[in-house]
Image: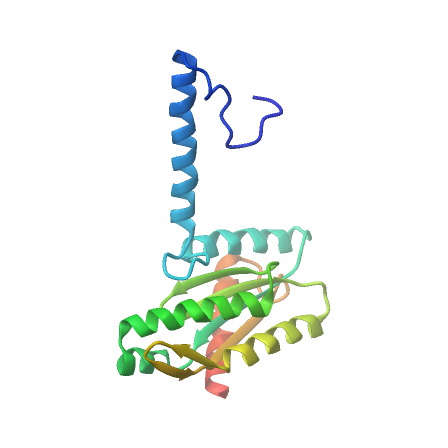
Length: 193
């Protein structure tokens, strides 16, 4: 109904057929919200998942092409993650991924769009004002944070990560090109150490 908050179903407090229908509809609305959350959220870290990343990638690429916004896209890989799994077990690896997700969020702030693609691969979109030094400062903060030790129940793990970054729309004109170029930038960062 006009003027109603989205997701709020009126008449759920009525004790008649309309109220029963409204209560049923309210349950459907709640389920839709839960399904959307599950569809776009990484279960382990609570960050966006690959599907969320692909939606965000299409959105920010389109914004850039239309001149509505610029973004920095970073692909992040946790260095030597396999070693944590091998030494401490998969549960420790999962704990490390959760801590890495929290560390990324803390380092880059709430304006960033974050996702975990798979395993130890994360992505982030940062709004880009045209000041490269702002992006460098944010990513430096991220790299410093990820280089700190992570304290797991099983022991301490020395952190480090590789980050590849591109600027949209300057470095890519399509979502596929942006994903590919960010991956190339990440590979170069890993090769450079």
